[in-house]
Image (cartoon, rainbow, N blue to C red; front, side, top):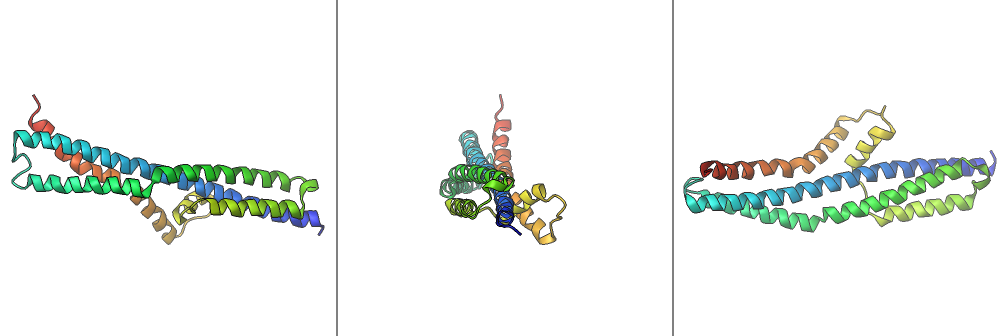
Length: 200
């Protein structure tokens, strides 16, 4: 086997790895964006619900029963926790970083594919240069999760069926992403009670 063929195989493997990384980090970017929206939505919903409920309790102190003030104190604590979580997790900034990283990995994958298809460009130096760039891009950003990879794999290897454990990874990730939206329902329902009670 000639050297260009050997380097071509190495470039093809690198292109495949880079493509899988790109798709996985694209899924990670989507996950981080969704979690950013969910946590921010939770904080906004809790804040508005608290304001509406406070207005209702000014008119009727027992609107939520004898312990209504304790209930809304708890919801205020949830609002604070959501706000702290939102800022400390930095979902929006992490999503932007992941977006920039997956775009760079996507471009590297395309370059490796072009080089692998051109025998005159298949050299050891090219393979080393692209491999080094790929390693640098991996270090530049946080890694994708197992669930991100599994969701991406359903696109680049659709015939591979996930195992039970892999499905559990995906389900846990989806549940964590959607949990803040479910948490919004309780305070919104309680605030709706104040609106209905005093609707003119």
